[in-house]
Length: 152
Image (tube, rainbow, N blue to C red; front, side, top):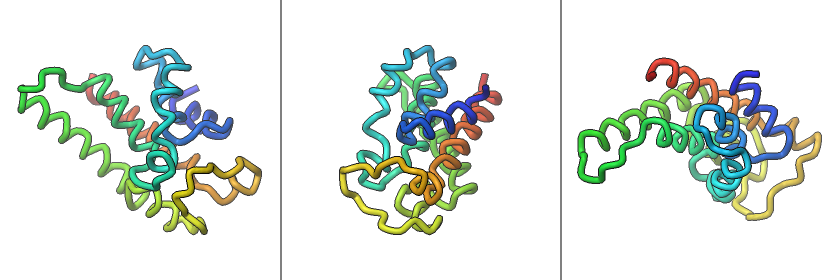
């Protein structure tokens, strides 16, 4: 199973967007599944259902940090290069989905009642029919796989 399929499968099991992408890449990051799920749990719903940066995008950024992040706080060149790469990943996601902001992509997809209530919606058949989030986690995983392939 590839990362895109794994991320979609995890989302369909009930994990949030960030958890789905982040945990799908445990084989690449070396992180234990439970630790990955916990670490990424706060980023679902655009960061705790605040509908800000899409959780799938946040997960892409976290994985990129694990794999290619800088460690020296005074290395301005490394920091700038890392941020450049993050912005390139964001742009790839925007090209496919119009934005990296959760509320914007949900509204664009026709989802009604995009609210910031902290209580998550029940994962029913109707939820999955109206939510395009499985597609977004798949897109993020696909973008990240392409990025990793080109940055070995």
